[in-house]
Image 1 (cartoon, rainbow, N blue to C red):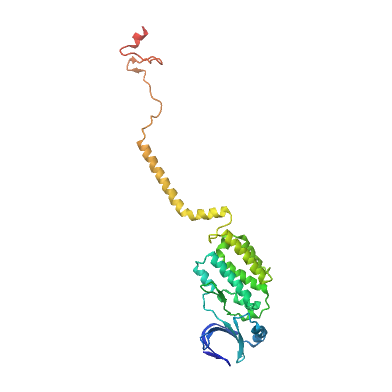
Image 2 (image 1 turned 45 degrees about the vertical axis):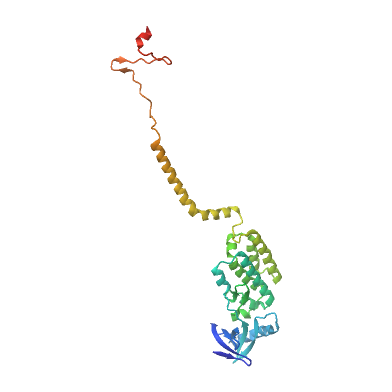
Length: 302
C-alpha cells in the first residue's frame, strides 16, 4: 500500500494500530527514510486536532514533528520513527547499573525540554511503548497517539504523572529497598502535580540523583537502616547457615559418644562395709592407727 502526496510517496511497512478514528502506520519514502504516519479519519476529531497540529509546524525545536497533509478528507500527521528497543524491553533484560539508569533518566528529561512539544503530545509520547533507548542510552520518542487523549486540554501536571510512572519503573530496585526516601518523596510530588516548570522537574531529579550516588556507591541498593540491612543479609545467608548448624550438631553428638565410650566408669552409690565374715568380727581400726603386719586386734588391746 502506498500513500501519495503532492511531494512524496510513502510505502506502508507496518500497521501498528487501526480503529474507526485513526490508523498508525510505519512507512518509508523513496529515500528509505522511516516515518510514522498518524491518519485521523473522524471529521469532527480532525477539526479539534487541526489547530494544535498546525501550530507545531512553526515550532522548530519540535524536530520530531515533520508536518501534516490532508488526503480524501483524512488528516495525516507525520513524525520521525525510531526502531530501537523500548524502555520496558531494555529494563526487562536487566544489567543496567544505577549510573546507567541515572544517565538514561537524565537524557529523558533533557530530551523532553529540548523538543518543547505541547503537553498533550508529550503525554502521549511518554507511554512505555513510545519511549525507545539505543545502546548509547539516547532516549527518543515515537508517537503512537491515542486521538482522544491528544485532543484533551492537558497541562504539565498530567505530564508529571507520566514521568513518575516511568521513573518508578526505572528505579524499581531502589524504591523497593527504600535506600533513598527522598526518591519516593520526589515521585509523590510529581504525581500530585507540584512541579509547574521543567526547571523544577529537572532540579528535583538532580538532587535525588546525587543522593542515590552517595548512598548507593556500589550500585546495589540496600535498605537505609542497619536493621533492614541485617535482615537482608540474614536471608541471603540462611541457606548456608542452616546446613552448617546441622553439621555442627552432628559433630558434637559424635564427639560426645566417643567421650562416653573412652571415659572410665564412675562408681555409683555408697560402698557397702562388712563388719564380720561368718562368726569372726572385724574391728575397724581407729582413724590414723593402721595395724602392723602380724599384729592382732587383741594384741594391740593388751
